[in-house]
Length: 626
Image 1 (cartoon, helix red, strand yellow):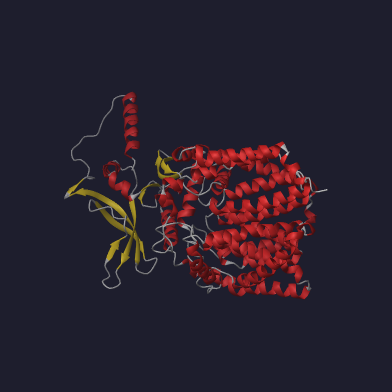
Image 2: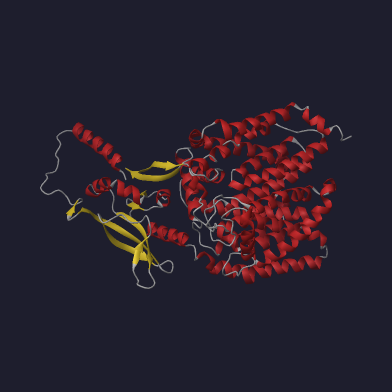
């Protein structure tokens, strides 16, 4: 009966159309469009690609779930499980301070969402100013980070108004979504207790709390991985066009969440082909046929790595001194050692969970043994178990990929977050093997161990969060945001090499090199009292032997700028973080910002002359913005 399946698939015109659109997307994305043109194209159209994909995803979800949604009744809810999910989310959110934790990623994402909200373009602002009460983005760059997270954040801005804190609202909501999906996965795999166990294991992971209260895209990434797995299980169960469309667009958006998440296309393809060959039909709809073209922003945006080799950040992180490539098997051994140090390090040093690490490793071993035995008879497995076994290919591939990355040390403060998909797999593995230990008393014991680990290790670690203190950029960003909150007026200019942070908070800002290059423009604004104050952010390194302070490279405005410290703090040993006011700009002994003596005020006799002067002044004012 099933022998004609393979030839039947290849006689289906829709399959050939899908392969054609896929080939066209590859040609356009990687070969046909020059690098610079590709970046401009993504900047101009990326928002609309994301909007189209997201709307088609919502449509597909409605089509596949509408019968269940129409029949849904509130009294059907398992309120005990809702309470477990709610309490787990609260634990993750209340012990960490909201703030930007991994600075470059999170601020760049916020800035991109800002341009998506204001202009519907994909651009990270690097210069912006308040012009007569309206904040205007004056200049920006195309960022390398995928677009789905800033797109979702821009939708939140659209609904509630632009606020940098919206990113924390989004990640807070995603925290409860993740725990809810985890419970649903566990319940499908092994019943109610398995779902509770998964929620407790995640609630006791300080790393998850750190990202739940941050501004990054890591939480959305694991939400989309888990959602795609669940939609894969639904497709195995339903085997219809609606469920395939939902799975397809979930995969597409997952690939647009983090760079390496496109790896999960592999298990999705395996799962779809397995179902197709089993059924002898393709079940392709028109949205699925067009999907490869909607993924175009990913390869087009990847051209950034060709235009800016610095985008690989090869000079940062823990790369070997002779590292010349971002990925290599030579990094594998060292990164594995760092992974062990992270998963089983001291909770005061790492935001890990011994409970999850220990149970997860044991569960993963049992799960892999079960998968090896059952891979040839997946048809006899439940849809969720079949999907979990197939998705293990993706989880393992991603872990190996990261272990071959030059900056793949899981115990590094910047890289820890990349372990979250591996944590997700460990949780799934524990829940999946629970039926092999059917004794109710044993399952209750595991729940007790997870709860005990949460209370005795997870909560104290999150409350103390000593593991965040070593990451100076994060502390400096929190310090800057405190400075912003303390200002009664926001019509000031900040000179800071991390100007994106200030622009994203609607504060006029420019970089140190730009301020030096456009010194005369700064003089113009000081003479005209454009800003209530002009400040500069700087970091000093302290010599422990002499006590002497030296400015960090790139922070020195030069001797022409006369500074007056207004706030400083030692946020880390041997560093001093300072904000100073620019009080004068001099050439030798001559002040360039002192008012010109004896010059009479301009008196105009007509409204037309006044309007003409104002227009000319405004044009010059905009040109002089630093």
